[in-house]
Amino acid sequence: DAKTTQPTSMDCAEGRAANLPCNHSTISGNEYVYWYRQIHSQGPQYIIHGLKNNETNEMASLIITEDKKSSTLILPHATLRDTAVYYCIVRVIYNQGGKLIFGQGTELSVKP
Amino acid sequence: KAGVTQTPRYLIKTRGQQVTLSCSPISGHRSVSWYQQTPGQGLQFLFEYFSETQRNKGNFPGRFSGRQFSNSRSEMNVSTLELGDSALYLCASSFGGDGSYEQYFGPGTRLTVT
Image (cartoon, rainbow over all chains, first blue to last red; front, side):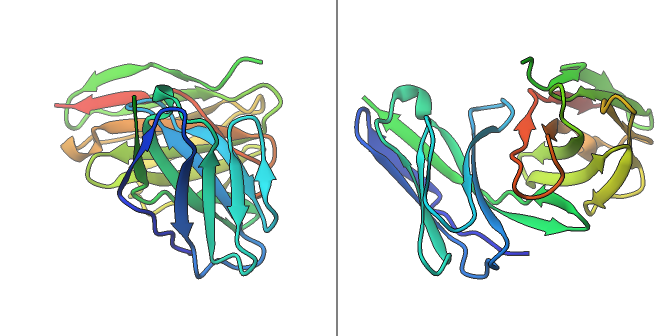
């Protein structure tokens, strides 16, 4: 299973862009990169996912390097409510299913 | 659309008992996955169901089992509860069964074993 590496914690000033990096050097070409976040004791919230191209939605942008070995989640204008643990996940597909393997994630603190 | 719902939200059981947790997926979603979250082990995959068939299973003992009904609702059962089974149990649903479909999580069931 492809493993991801993320910084344990990061700080960001409110209103600024938060850039959360993730390394996944063993990812294969048909595996997706997913980002979720979890606010204390709530269920994880889906943010965005991509296969090899950059993606953007109303919450965030996902930048995947050309070799797919790393990616960056960008929250363009962080607010205090974006304080959460952010998980970068490589979606393992086998037996026609796709389980999510969560690592330890990055604890993002957005400060006023 | 209503989100993923899980019942009950909180549960206290005694060692040796069994417990059944329920998950109702988002309408139209056919895949349901279960995860266990503990402070020590983090979020771990338990199993995945698609169209009433278990397709994937995580590395958990046979005391953990589940099933999916024809309306896509799912239940998971834990028999002979141990203290270490105390955790937040999360259910997630997705429309399809491959990696291109995002999973949406419910609020979880907090199980405490005493």
